[in-house]
Amino acid sequence: MILIEFFLISVIINIIFWYREYSRNRKYPIILLFHQIENNWRPGVGWNYLSQFNRFMNYLKDNNYNVLPLSILLENTKRYSRKEIIITFDDGYEDVYKYVYPIMKKYDFPFAIFPIVDYFGKYNDWDFVIGEKTRHLDIKQLIELSNDEFVTIGSHTLNHLDLNRVSKQIMRSEIVNSKEKLEKIIGRDVDYLSYPFGIYNDTIIKITKDSGYKMALGYYARKNSDSYYTIPRTGIYLIDTMSDFKLKLNNYFVIFDWFEDLKGRTINLLSNLACNNKRKSEIY
Image (cartoon, rainbow, N blue to C red; front, top):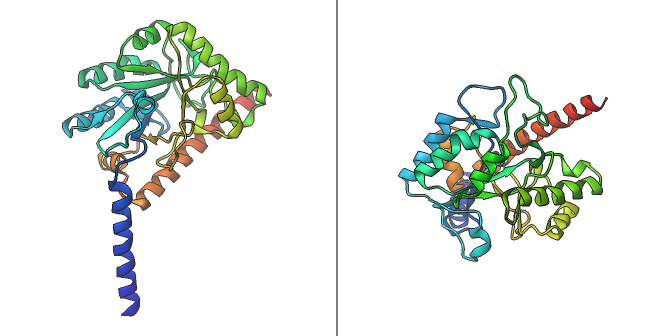
């Protein structure tokens, strides 16, 4: 009986802690991360059906979520409520222009795109792909998107390499040259970097800062961070149901948050290993 009482008291204390931790305003809003938006099935889980994505965006609109531009993080020092979020897309696939852009315009949602700068108009040969490859944005599409005040353009490096596995010289080239190339194309400053595979270390962060980026984003469900160069994001995948999506928006439960972090790391690790093995096979 004493053990049962102790267990119940522990549960109550944890519930109170979780409520205080997750109901208060946040240092950063939840930042959602998408990759590919497709009409047809393809192998893998790092993408979303167009219909699935549309349902998620419709839920945000119907439930009065305030979708913020990425730049708000630099402009404001306030803490954010649970109904304030940011939406981002990595890799810069053509489907962002074809499918995502009209939906976001319909809902008046700002969003950020992080294209791979040496792949404009090309197929995703950098990735391990089973089946049909996917085309990236071309320069004309990118410029049109960049001219919309609701769209923020950032860099996802030149070639989507695991920066933790390359020399310092290549690391610097991927970070610095992608910024310079992108700025020439769109005719404005590029202030944001998305780390490939969400991977960074002290050297990568230092080069990013020294290159003039004002902010850099990683992956995974949730991390406490006060640095503008290690900002976490919440990945949204094919396997996420509407219930999963709602929980990710709120991050109420430590256990769910831990599970999502593990799921994100696993998906990302498998993607990273597949890409690295593909590159090794091409070299040899």
